[in-house]
Image 1 (cartoon, rainbow, N blue to C red):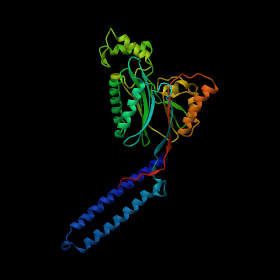
Image 2 (cartoon, one colour):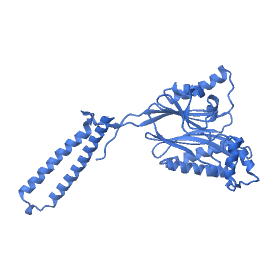
Image 3 (cartoon, one colour):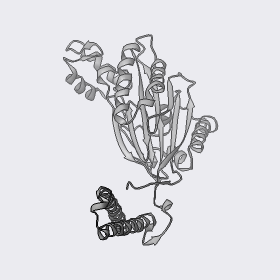
Image 4 (cartoon, rainbow, N blue to C red):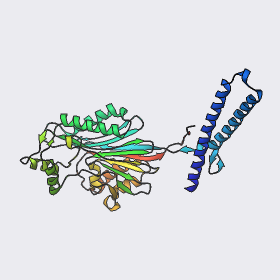
Length: 363
């Protein structure tokens, strides 16, 4: 590490000297051009030309130092490069139960957006979760190209929530995803779509907390804070607050696209590394093969053995999607175990170094 710091220091110093040399050369050249030949002494002219030549030699030598210096050895400049991460991705998608899941890959201004959503409804209206996920997909197809960073994505998600609350009354959708640019990932979620990450050492973590259904006491405490406020166009009062409690307890989620003013996002930004992997999955996948985990953090192997095996036994996203498909088939057919009927979506993202690209210093 000390050697790397020293190398960086030498490189930075050389770049500064190059810039100083350029300024001096520019000033000397400008002065010579301003001098009138009839007023110029021959010695002054010779001295100026000599300094320019010296400056050019020093500039060339320093440039070579920058282009060739690494660990005290002369090497081609293309080895002084910055490694970036590419994502190898593949989806597992079975929407045959209710038709309310969706996944999407969208290009943004400077990267890629990966999204998974799981729709549902309270069965009190004509709209379903399928209407919500169709709206989500439509908006991302339309607007993802304008996303330049996480702030644009957050604004878009809140806009989608507002629109869906208005046009899809009684229906909603949990959502989670990853925004990728360079080596940086921005994760977001609302509801119970999980983002599970495999570290290069093989350990699994849940990136964001899940908004799972509440226990009675927790729901009562939350609703007490809402009394006097307006939620989805209805004022929460002492007379109707029990209906709000039942919504938190029985509707499975207390946060999702379509929840109106109470909608919020969990989010986390982090750098990724070669060998890491991510699974974005609906509860049709996670509930079948791991213990529900409301909080972000480490996922023990005992609580998610099958998910560990799927992710860690696969070297790329396609293999992982195939492994998940085989796991579901083997569990239901070979082992004859019942799995909760549900749509099932898993989007696998595997991180790999791309071919190194030249990182030219600004001079």
